[in-house]
Every structure is written in structure tokens, then in C-alpha cells.
Length: 161
Image (cartoon, rainbow, N blue to C red):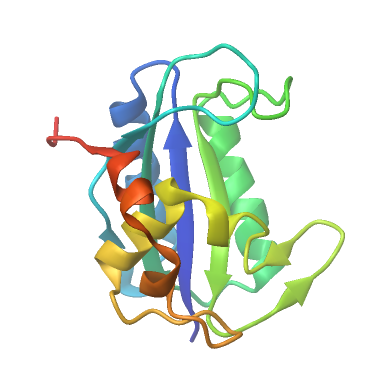
């Protein structure tokens, strides 16, 4: 059974509550309900769209769902929490991205794993390293080796609500 990592992000309608609610839903997808979640972090938005800061985290779970079935389940959770896809990199109630699916490398029209932006995004790398400091990408690169001081300083760890 693969260990999967999912990025969570929100910047609308009480973002910390959105992530907490999403974690409950992810727990339903996890084998035996076992779910690990990183700290929540505040980060500045990507792109040129004016919007509030994001709250981000990463969750880790074991699941029996196949990759595309898991993607469908993640998108259903997003929709249940009011996700509307209007503007690329625009504000959202919830964004769930499948980062890693075991050691699999997946390149399908609907799904790329490892996630295409994983190696460049502090709001993904820092929580990943928090959950698993020895985590290694399928290519052999250690997550911790991709993180620099500027990435750490770009995030603000949030106190649990």
C-alpha cells in the first residue's frame, strides 16, 4: 500500500478551518483512518492575482485508492468545500494536490506525480520535510536538500486554531 503525500492550501472563508475540515475528509480516505498532518504555514500567493495570503500544510496517508481514484476523491473534497476553478493561481477555499504516490512516477493528462511544482515551492517542501526529514523523491533527491534558508524564512508557522 503506497504512502501518499497531499498538499493542502486555502486563502478564502477561514483558511485554517478549511484545512482542518479537509484533513478530516482525508482521514476518511486513509487506510485505518491514519493520517499525519504537518504544521500549518502562512505563505504569500504565487502569480500576479491580488489575493490574501495562503494557509498551507501537507498530509501523509496510506491508501488503497489507485492514483486517479485518489485524484477524483481529492477533487470531490475540494468541491464539497466550495472550490471554484476560475483563475489560474487565483484565490480558493481549498486546493488539494497529490504530491507523491509512493515511489511512482506518473505522467498522465490529468495527473503528474511527483507534482510538477514540488521541488520549487517552500510551502510544500518545508511541511514535507517536517513530516518526514528523510523523504526521498523517486529520482533519489532528498527533500531536505531542496530547502534553503530563504524558503524557511518565506513561511510563517501558525499556531493551531
